[in-house]
Length: 310
Image (cartoon, rainbow, N blue to C red; front, side, top):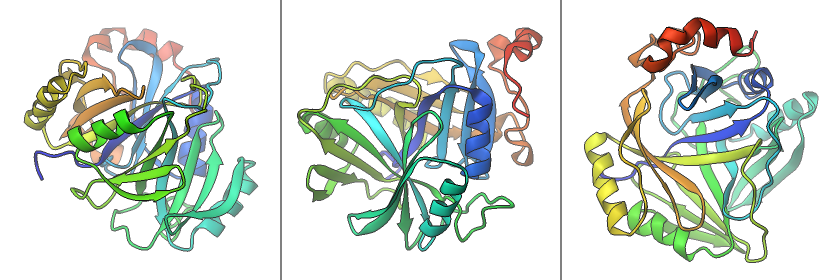
């Protein structure tokens, strides 16, 4: 198991206004900001990491908030919706909360025997809250959101494709997922290496127009491995399948490889180590602006440009 994919590590998306993004995810959804840093390639732009108390893999949603970016368009060749797990019986709370805060949502529905609630964030990014009977992950709670309702972490990610076979091959032959269930044109794949954040849904829509990744879109999906040794094993396996994959990249809080699966979605494989407490104490996570070392000498200039959050 230690040399296998351990479900979803994190999901990265694109937003517009940084303060609006911060307010929505910390206040309305009640996630913890576990790291406030900048884009490695654009240090005048934040990179936010939201998750549980410790920033555990399988809970981390990250954003690049680019002010004024055009709105994306959901479609094929994209990751089109992000699924979170919430406690059984909590959807009534969430529907009331979303309505109170003028969030666009659809009323509760059901698939694969589970109730779920769909909503859009302020940039149009699509989410599902799925009720689960059992989830032992420790939630991050706030004054408004208790353990009875708080988000646990990821439940699934959905990818929309015109033809599923090539993406399916990567999921099953490279990443070790298995097809577990089908409903109409939705195919549910799951890994048994972890109990949570273990599901990828493929929605096959032959006539769907290709989407456009911009504001309100998923940028990439990262899958989890234990360490760098395992990461490099997956690089060899990906190359053997004919995939174009990067060299190992140091992202400060994990090490990564990137490749675009044949269906068009950017995938990442990321390590558990070193984690988010490598440069910040657990109780201080998200409170300080942490910069990649190459930008530390420009801190004053960067801080002057970045939008104020509070």
